[in-house]
Amino acid sequence: MQEDFEEHAEKAKTLPESTTNENKLILYGLYKQATVGPVNTARPGMFNLREKAKWDAWKAVEGKSKEEAMNDYITKVKQLLEEAAAGST
Image (cartoon, rainbow, N blue to C red):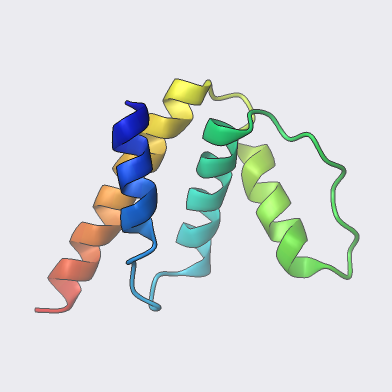
């Protein structure tokens, strides 16, 4: 699964600019959970909106195991790539 995860992490870099921030945050949270584990930093301050959103996305998936997070990440990347391909035809 690790190889599949890494392969999809590379594919995620090819997602179109039109990918929503919400979807990017979901991917970010799952990626961090799969690679780092539970949140290990303090929540950024209220003036750092971007970092706070990323932290919140990671915190939202805190209960998932590494394997669950990898699997969900792979599924989400596949879904977004399919949507991008369908939208570009």
